[in-house]
Image (cartoon, one colour):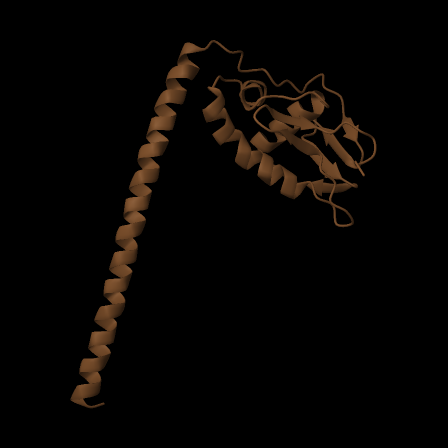
Length: 171
């Protein structure tokens, strides 16, 4: 390899490293913004949670019965969810939210009410919405069957969510 080729390779490597450095700086700035927003959210939520005296044991499963709506079954005692007899893996929070929605089938629950019932603490509606939305999205994705795509969880814009309690999906 000649001197000229070596110089070109070094210049290309330096340019590549500079691009990586800019990318890392951008990522660091984004992480800093995210961290600051998270701290603000946690601070406001922590103050509200401390101020509110909510019964943390709001979701109790010991005396709950198995709920079945169409192909979806939730067994709160065994902590099992199935769609068309196929087990679905849910996080504890997703399970609690699904149980609250099914237990209140057909009734619209605000995000604030879902946090109160599923998580056992208080948040204002905006913070509750930011907390609940991603869980609802993941729940909807996990509850889809292979043969069809029934919507179990519905949104009432500006109000909250409800679980479809019909025995058949909507046409």
